[in-house]
Length: 489
Image 1 (tube, rainbow, N blue to C red):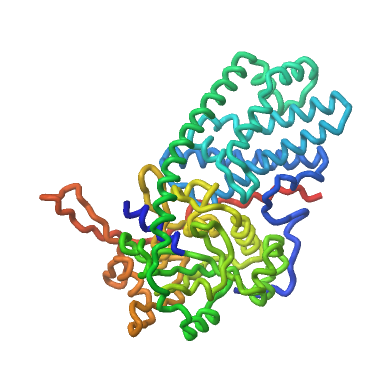
Image 2 (cartoon, rainbow, N blue to C red; image 1 turned 30 degrees about the vertical axis):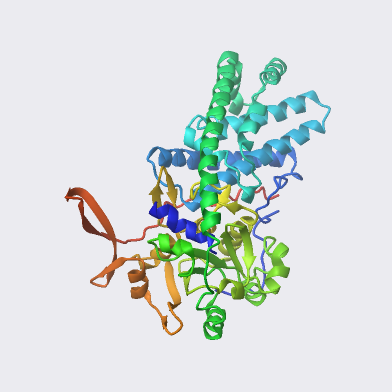
C-alpha cells in the first residue's frame, strides 16, 4: 500500500558543441512510425537483418536469464527490447513491400523465406516464455509499437498455406536456411506451434483484462484524491527561489517536489511526490548541440515559449513551464554526474525522452511496462544507463519519486543533489543538503555513510520488528551495447 500511495502522489502534480555531427547513415530520431527502412534495397535489408540477428543472439538469452532469475528489467533492457521489436517489424514490412512490387516468383519466395528466417532467429527460441512474450507485445509509442503487434506479425508470417507453397517452389537454398527449412517442413509441428501461440495470446489478453480492472480502480482513486488541494504552495511566486532555479538548472536535470497541501500527502509515508526533467532552454540546447535534434524540432515553439520541463501526471506526458511547476512547498534538483557527454549519449537520451510524449499515466505503477508512464518511469526509461532503485509491490515492480531521489545517498552514486529549498509555513524557509535529504526520506547516517532502514520481522516477538540498516552501494547494470545496426552504404 505504501508503494502504491507514494507513487499516486505523482498525480499532483554540460558540455558545449559548436557543430552537430552525423552519427551514421540515415540516423534519425526514434520515431512513432515504423517506416524507417522504407528506402532500403533488398540487399541492404538483408545485411541489416543479419546485424539484428547477431545482436539478438546475446541480448535475448541474457534477458530470458534475467526473467528466470526474477530480476527487474532495467531501463536499457526495456528500451532495447522494444527497439528490437520495431526493427523486426520494420524489416518484415519492408520485405513485404519489396515482394509486392515485384512480379518475379523467385524474388517473392526469396523475400518470404527471409521474413521467416528473421522470425526464426529473433523470436522463435524465446516466444513461448510467458513474461518475454507479454513484454514484447506491450504497446510502446516510443518505438511505434501497438499492443500485440509483434504477435500479429508472427502469426501473419506463420501462414501454413503460404509456407507449403514456398516449400514446393524453392529448390535451392543457402546453407544458412537449412535449419529453417527443416523447421518449416514439419507441417504438424508448425500447426501445433500456431495453436500454442494462439492459446497463449488468449491467456495474455485475460491477464490484460485483470490489469485493466486494477488500472480503472487505481485511476478512479487517483483522480478523486488528486484533485483535493487547499492552498497554493509556499514556493509559489517566490522570486528568489525561481531565479536560483533558472540559474541552477541544466539540460537533463531531474526535479523533485513535495506538496504538503495535497490530500494525497496525508496518506503517504514517502517524502517526494513528483519528478520531472528539465529539457533545457533554447540557448542551452543550442550550446549543447541539440536544438536541431529531430526529437526537439516538433517542440521548439513550446520550448521557446518557456515550457522547458517535461513531466508525466494524470493528464499525460507533456511540457510545462517552470512558473507553473513552482506550485510546491519543496523543490530539489538532481544531476546525473556520470553521463558520458559525448554527442551520441545525449542524442540518445533526448531521443528516448521526447519519444515518450503522448503516453498516458500508468495507474498500474509497473516500471517494467512501456505503454504507460508515471513521473518516475519517465526518468527510469530516459536515463536507461542508470540502475535506479525499485520496489516490489503486489506482483509488480514500481519506482517512486523517493526511489529516484534516494540514489543520491548511495556510495559511488551517479546522481548528485545540487539544490534543495523547502518551506513548510510562511515563515519557515530553509535550504537543505544531503543530510536533510536523508532525514526527510527516513534514511540513517552512520559514520558518514547513509543507510536504508529496513524492518526485519523474521525473528519478531509480540509483533515488534527489528530495524536493520542496509548499506547503499551503487553498481552499474551489466553493459549492453547500443543497437546501432543501420546499414552504412
